[in-house]
Length: 219
Ligand code: ADE
Image (cartoon, rainbow, N blue to C red; front, side, top):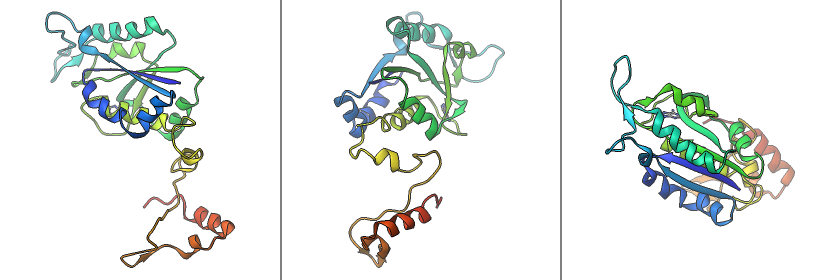
């Protein structure tokens, strides 16, 4: 069982995806669990404020330490083994190998994903974070989309989540950076574009050779 606790101000942005298709099936099979913590509940004052202006000046608002620390501590009080992930553009770039490592952790693993929002976060928040993860060299408005991408890429690798036992293994990127070979389904002829005849030959050796020759191509 892999457990994710997502600390966010925007649960409604995450829920539809996690309640769909394979991510949801994984929960029905008892292989994954998603919980939400509303960061607002840990906000300060009558407005439950979670952000403030940066020392030294500058535009925008930063996530404050107090709501984040108390939100994370509320989860860790119940499960001290939980590891904290923060999606941030300055983190380590996420890749398939990292997804595989997260998926193959000890049997019961619990990740807390803290979704920052606004222009950024107080640097001291990083002192309670185990993994800083970037999705790439671009800037998003918050950590919600990265959280979904991290969860999706990890959960699909858990044995039993995908239908075919082997599908996660042989698919694109599964061994790091080898891309998948081209695939075709019916019809044989679609608007004059036909399927390579070797794939209809029934010769498994030749098909495997063709696939090996045609995999790993970035189009
Ligand atoms: N938050 C904002 N931009 C991000 C990115 N590229 N990766 C991860 N988290 C982010």
